[in-house]
View: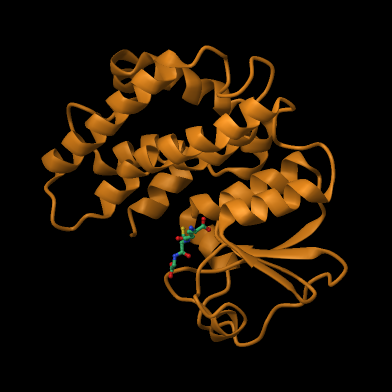
Length: 238
Ligand SMILES: N[C@@H](CCC(=O)N[C@@H](CS)C(=O)NCC(=O)O)C(=O)O
């Protein structure tokens, strides 16, 4: 599953930059990367035409390192314009055309950035622990459970249905989702006997589970993001 996607990405074997539509911007990245996904969701929400060039992060092509010396993704190129850093790219894209992904109220908009700063790193605890070669599975699960408890408490305190509104997802929801969506596939990959099913997640962390379910129904998320099965398949080869 993940291999099929990776096969369509550019790796060391790709010797020349692929041809792209020069009349629209290009995002270089990987759908397995939560930072790239932020940009792709924003492009989808705003209906911005673009090229997507998939980069195999484990085996990057030389031409990519020439145009983007840090080798990081996402990377935006539009003629001579070049941008790195997912949130810089997202806010640039947001200025290009309507609809904005930010709520109208300036205070709620500003709070959204603080929410992302708090929730995104906590949600990334899951994948960081999966990749930690030093820790035992029990230690990884312990750390992930602490992060889940923190997230659950935060979601139980949010007064609105989504993070910034009752009506629809906005910036804070989309920017945080790309780390939240990794939790279930990481738990599946760890396959810890007493804690590996969505049912257990729902019972132990109900506010978090309710929000995960709600966001998984978002049309942009459904169009852009990969299924938990495909993500878990990718994590199993990391
Ligand atoms: N702060 C950056 C982080 C980007 C980042 O760390 N991307 C990862 C992939 S998820 C990456 O490119 N890592 C470098 C590498 O794989 O060599 C952002 O928000 O865009």
